[in-house]
Structures are given as C-alpha cells and as structure tokens.
Length: 404
View 1 (cartoon, rainbow, N blue to C red):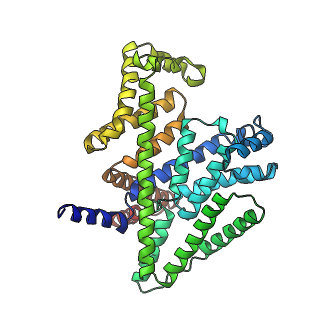
View 2: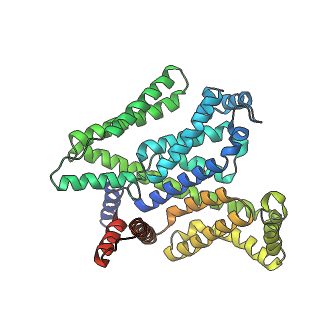
View 3: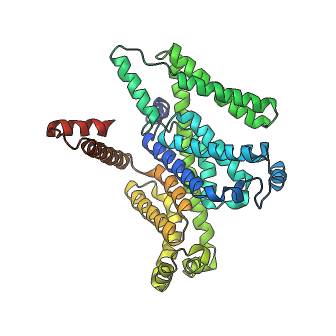
C-alpha cells in the first residue's frame, strides 16, 4: 500500500496539471479538419445530389428518417436552397478555421455541427471514413487541441510577451463578438423549438462555460477559480484523448476480428477481389499488376488481418507500436492510391496520428517551420531583386521565422 499511494498521487497530478498529448491532439485536429475540408471542396460540384434539398434522397425522405432516428442535423430546419448553401458554407469555413486553430473551442463546436448536419442529412452517402470523422468531430469538442500549431497559441504567446514587458494585452473584442453572435443564434433556435432538450443542454452549456472562462481569466487570471477551471479542462481533455485512442483501437480490433471470420480472408484471396471492381480501380493497370502476383495478394491479405488484430496489443511496447503504426499508415496511403479511397485513408491516418511519438511530431514541426522560413526568405529576396541581404541578417531572419 505504501508503494501504491505515491503512484496514484503522481497519476492524479499528471492528469490534472496539464492537458496531455498537445502535439497529438493538434495533429488530430489538423488531420480531420483538412480531410473534411478537402472532401467538401472536391464534392462542391456534386453537393446538390449528395445533400441538397432536391437530391435523390429528398428533403421529405430525410425528414422522415431523422424523425425516426432522432439524428442531429440543422439542414432539416428548412428545405430552402439558401439555407442549404449557408450550412455547406458553414461546414467549409469552420473546417478551414479549425485547421489553422483560430478560436479553436468555438470552431470545434461549429465543425461538429457541420459534420453532423451534412452526414445525418444523407446517411446512405458515407463510408467507413465518414463514420470516423463523425465520431472524432464530437470528441474534438472536448479536447484542448489548440495548444500548439494554432493561431490561438500564437495569440496567447503574444499576450504573455506583452505581460512580460509590463504591457496590458489587447482586449479580445473578436472573441466577445463571436460569443455574442452565437448566443443570439442559439437563442433564435431555442425560441423556434429547433433543438431537442439534449442538444439544448449541450450547446447552452458550452456557451455558458465559454462565458465563465472569459470572466475568470479577465478577473482572476492567477487565482483559485482559474486553477480549478484548468484542472477541469485538463481532466476533460485527457479523458477525450483517451476515448480517441480507444476508438482507434476498437476500429482496428473489430475490423480484424470480423475479417478473420470471412472465408476469403482465411484463404488469403480477399484483397484480390476489390482490385477487379471498377468502383475501386482508378488505375486498372496498377490493380492488374498487383493482383497478378498471388504471393503479394496472400501476404497483403494476411498482413492486414494480423496488423489490425495486433495493433492494440503493441501499445504496450513503444518500438513495436511505432513500427506497426508506420506500416498501417503506409497501407492507408496505398489504399488511397490503388483503391481510390483518399478521404477514407486520410481519416484513418488522422486517427492513427494520435499514437505518433511526441519527439517525431516536434521534429516534424521544426521541419515545417524551417521550410516556411525558407519560403519567406526566398520570397523577400525575389521581392527585392536589386538589394542583397547580409548573410547574418538573412540567417537571423530565418531563425526568427522558424520560431514564429
């Protein structure tokens, strides 16, 4: 008992004093926001057929289905074309802003609203990747996914620098205005009876928590109320991050165990058949080349099942987990090209990213920052062709850009 008590105390301190996995949660945010945004942009010419009020799955049929399954979608609030275009634009804009980490708490909620509204409008249009995005959009609302690699983090860093210089940070007028506009919209939806009791509680609760957070940060930035809010936020974030990890493991384990029960997966020929379906053959010559080698088909079939079943157990060994994670991400990249499923693959890679090592993500961030600094430096040189920068000034500029 004497040995267990210190371990429990350290565990409690660890999950309450900080939001764990800041880089992992950031890359999950970026991955899913980018996947959904790219999907919306690619399907923009086909948006009417997929989600529009005059599509094959008509607005009346969707309304009947939603009345039975009680799914959340604001597209059912009106059957007008203007409302549909506004909701589609909301989904795209919120995805882009969540991607760059602008007002992450608010954008994560709007991102969830956009994902659920479109997907629940036409439930027969999705695949496995859409289901993953559907779940992760809900989980992201409860994470502090803007701690790094976001405009929110940049704004917080500038505010800390201003306080260190003895200056008062600029007031957050944009945040207050955004909070007021969303509160007004929520009040209109409530008055019109558009939201169920459960969703009313969720949205008004999130809106009130944001107001409480702003008030405490403004009035007592270093007091006990702020410490309490940080502890609660860290607990919620860490619990949501754990759920994301568990969800990824559950997806792979159930997929693997269901596969192993199929006769085609047992005899090693399952991968052969989708390679010869027109729907999954964007590159017929490549599909024929891969399926022509029986040994390759056998190894890929058995390897897929083994990797999916083994993945949850490799989490207990860091090296084994990293090796298998790299293999599975590579497999998803191959699926994107060979089978023509880019968004399914991107969604799964984004889910896998929660298990990436922090050291690797930091190096990745450093590479991106240096590449961005190089682009900025080269752009400045091209803009001033008649002037030459001293080498020390150029190097200093690059260093500053890489840490911005």
